[in-house]
Image (tube, rainbow, N blue to C red):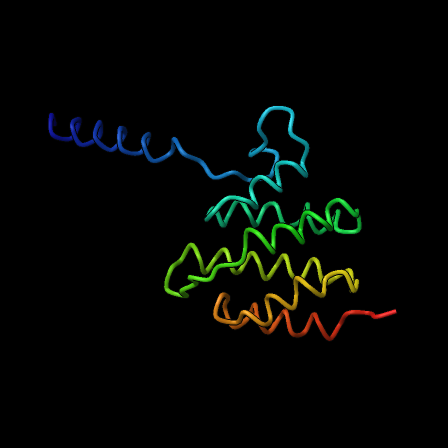
Length: 148
């Protein structure tokens, strides 16, 4: 009987340790201080790794992509935070950051603006820096640009 109580206590202690770190369910759960939703999204997208958190930030960016400020921020993120000359598909952090880069490219490409051309061209030309799927997305987006 004493062993049963010890086992029960051990299980209780170990389950309480595993439940202390919960995943964020919404972007609001990740907000720091008086940050706006957009500021939180941009801060998270600048982090290395943190794939699940970045997935939460993508809908905010997509909803605001028509805003010129957001459009410029996404271009900047893609050019300065998601280019990786040492890309290796085996590295999970690099791989999933490139998945996020592909999603950001798609969001940027939804505008079909000629202003996306330099960003998309860089992703298409530096094919060793990205996954195959990201490079193919960049080529497709170049074809979808509406030149006036």
